[in-house]
Image 1 (cartoon, rainbow over the protein chains, first blue to last red):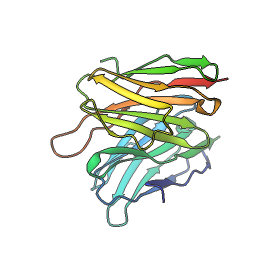
Image 2: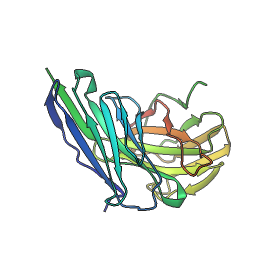
Image 3: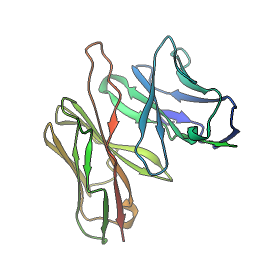
Image 4: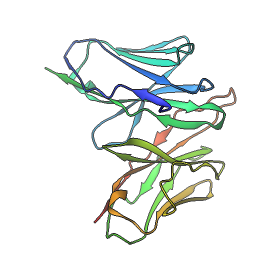
Length: 110
Length: 117
């Protein structure tokens, strides 16, 4: 089993739609969680950190469920510019190993 | 700060040649990660360092790959001899450890696109 698993998609949604991605992680000792965004032929960049209490940044909401070991990202009112690959990222266990999920591709169409 | 700096941005080499990729992490960051990205396998962690010491190299594909971090501001990833299946984008990232027991987010360099022909 992979340490961090995501549905690869692609998710094809119209502008204005709400879309949600989930990610599961296997190491219960993991401490830090993030969502990254990667555009085609670019490096991954931080989208948002994920806190235990959940957090929101504009149209983006991230949630963490430690009991079930999953992380979610909700995007409301999708824009064409949201089209990208979204990577779930976990610092794993006592060794602070930074593990990426395979990424979920989102394509927003007019 | 200029961010994580990688060089070269692109490298085309012939099979059998030695390839050296370079990375300068963000000043003050004590973690450095090397990743390889391909369409088939996504982002794979190859090796990472903490305070210049290699912590986990279990992702290094084989003995042809080696990585060093001689000081806090420089790391190299070497492939010798290179093979066509090594063609990929290689990313370097750095991060730091917070006192409260969690890492900051990792910042990535722009990557080195390696093509082995």
